Amino acid sequence: MTLKPLADRVVIKRLEAEETTKGGIILTAAAKEKPDLSVVVAVGPGVLVDGKEVTMILKPGDKVITSKYMGTEVKIDGEQLTIVKQSDVVAIVED
Image 1 (cartoon, one colour):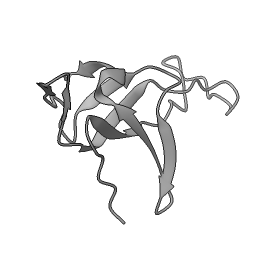
Image 2: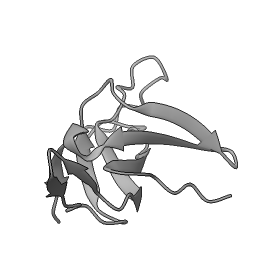
Image 3: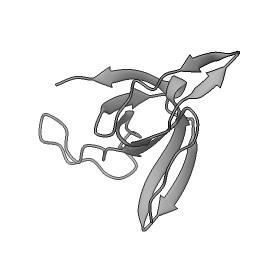
Image 4: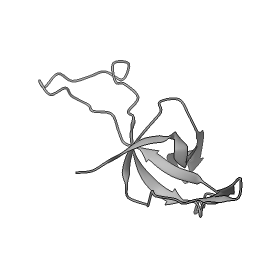
């Protein structure tokens, strides 16, 4: 199944939390923080706001940082995804 976002929405997939610390300590499930880093899966076409076009600057494959508690979580084909507005993305991570 394919998920196609509408308007200024973006579908993201959260990247997995680290299993170990930099010092080699293995973390339990309770000690892992919810990661802020996600990868963009799909991008909507954009939208008109007050007669002005909101262009989509994100593209599939971009690594982004989002606010911790936002968006709509959905499960498609066993994969956990989140649908957010482009404005909920606070930064693009460049390697």
